[in-house]
Length: 121
Image 1: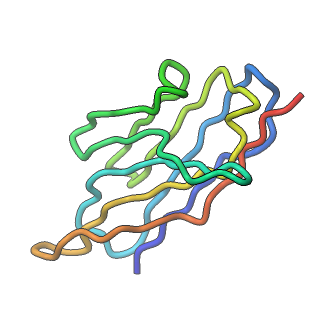
Image 2 (image 1 turned 180 degrees about the vertical axis):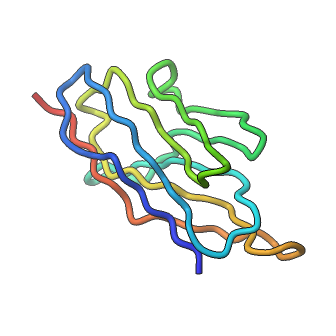
């Protein structure tokens, strides 16, 4: 059984930094693309950053230049480095991974439970 666990959230002042982690565990053959989403109270979930299996990245305009997504395939972990945080970055952050559990089987979508990020003075 595959699990994704996010960690690293917390309370930070505006201008501060946090690094979120998304660790995958279980029976995994390959992790394809991984996305970070966030959902603020009363708002729809939005895509923040994406990294492909080869390491190509994409970002929402609202976080470009401030957030960096990266992956460590050996550790089955994806990171989201968040710098210059703003109050509007406050949200629950979720990772979503496209995972193949064994050779020849199509990938499936997996979600973590989320980690809360609060940016406030």
